[in-house]
Amino acid sequence: MESKAYNAFKMAQSQFDKVADLLDLEQSTRDLLRNPLREYHFSIPIRMDDGSSKVFRGFRVQHNDARGPGKGGIRFHPQETVDTVRALAMWMTWKCAVVNIPLGGGKGGVICDPHNLSMREQEQICRGWIRQISRDIGPLRDVPAPDVMTNAQHMLWMLDEFEAIHGAKYPGAITGKPVGMGGSLGRTEATGYGVIFTVREALREMKIRAENTVASVQGFGNVAQYAIRLYNEMGGTVCCVSSWDQADQTSYAFRKADGIDIDELMAITDRFGGIDKAKARDAGYEVLPGDAWIEQEADILLPCALENQITGENVGRIHKRVKIISEGANGPTTPEADAVIQQRGIFMIPDFLANAGGVTCSYFEQVQSNMNYFWEKGEVLGKLDVKMTSAYLDVSRLARERDIYMRDAAYVISINRVAQACKDRGWV
Image 1 (cartoon, rainbow, N blue to C red):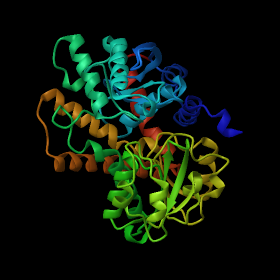
Image 2: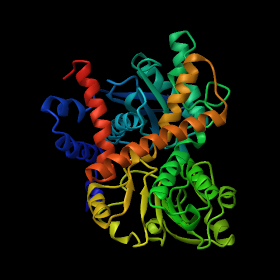
Image 3: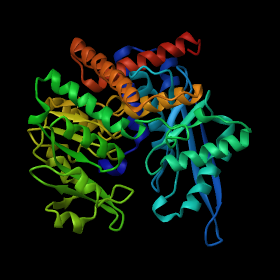
């Protein structure tokens, strides 16, 4: 079965290898870029609330920093693996390069489930993670940020521990902090908005009006919520969303043919993006199996959850009406599914372009923190729109000129930029 054999890092490497062949990269450059420059594995011992001790496993992978300090989130997830972290670090390298910001790629994680941890226990994990890695991160070296099941509070605990260890204030050492404590306005909206900025440009190129389109969304966390809001503001209708149910340990899809009401669903959603099934039914939503989002009669699919969601096994269920897929999540589409999507002529906006709004705004936060001067929200979102639109147009132009798939075009641009930086530094 494809899903059982799935390995995110092998997938990231196969995507790289394909484009390395297109670019005819020399072997030394391939050897450098298809593996991380360095990685850290460590144990985090924690005193639990009941007085017992527990040891959690943590990681930080720095894939490449030829273009600038590392950048990438920290995930708290019970199924976290180092191969997932390696893949995400590599994708971060390409993501920073495709939107042309002067940063490299990194990623971190802890194998844990915040659902089952008190806030004090989560704080201890955050501080313990920093204690293990504090010599190898920082504003000029590698800048962590939030990711799956981590948030601004986690980042502030981490920053506080980092500053305590180093004996000075380093607000640019970590991004995704609370506004007022060095965080940037607009950061919460950035990833979801960035996804829709790319969809907007794709619709313009196709001469399709947003108000005549319908979308189906996987996920109902931060990225999905803000993507839906901006898409609604453009006039689009979302017919279906899916969300994870912690109690049942499975996902469900919530459908309303005439369009979901984002505020109505937000009112019955927990802090992890789980929608209350009973209340949703009362509000007139059909509650379907979690994978039903992929088969909806829609023009646009927005996978905004986790990796490995559109596979060789379910890609055939995508409705013939679908014209655009914009990947809000990292690595949601496997190479087997990609081949089918390309064959069907569905326009793919690849993850490391579509969801680069988050890292772009993290970069803005880093710049603001380092110079201790902060911008208004409109300025941040305006700069974000300019960056995302420019990156999209570069990729779209190259895809048309060379008659290649959008994912391949994005990789050609980003890998070229990183390979050139490595060459200029004399690494290869």
